Image (cartoon, rainbow, N blue to C red; front, side, top):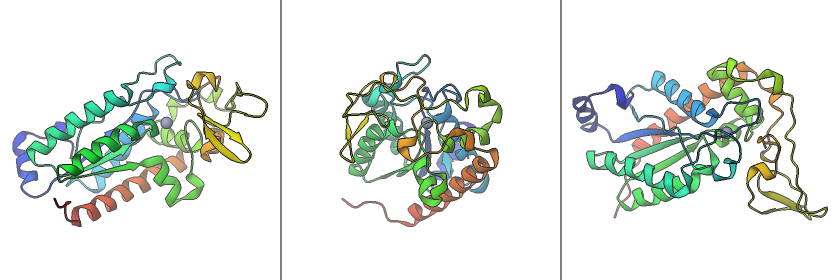
Length: 261
Ligand SMILES: [Zn+2]
């Protein structure tokens, strides 16, 4: 059940029985010419809606549409709270929910760059005697079904967007390649995101993403397929599977005792 549709009596009644809250966290960031800026927000939000259908007895807080995505700010429309900004916003939300009695926080995360901030909030909540769990949907989808594995702007995310609304994919651009460019040197080629390959290993050299790619999608280094392989059927099956997984995980977390002092 969605927190914004409840009144305070509903929340008090829920908290007399349970202490779980789901918080979808997204990002507004470039995903290439073929995908919308809200990809990382719309997919976890849709998973939350599917979760609500199969498990209505869990509170779902409003989806946070901004995240930490500093390296993508070079592309128009991307807005980042920064690592510290997201940590502050999320910690404020979690601390206030804690005051009412919530103790099990499940973050339905849509963007890898958010993890530094969310993990800091998770440690803080643990020190207060609560659990904060991060469900990184795109990683878990690839773990439960390896053929779904993917990353930023590749087939996995394109399939997820198709499940939300196929009209959001710009078909005229879906065949464009990643356009990885700007190698550090002949010996140190750019691979994916901030990595450069050297003697079979990946070394990280942080750079703004618009210095590494012409159009801002980088997924091959994350094991993703071409977005042309994505289908709506894949997306629908994958988001259903993630909603089932999240329900099962929450039920296991609810059976677990809270951290002790
Ligand atoms: Zn994404």
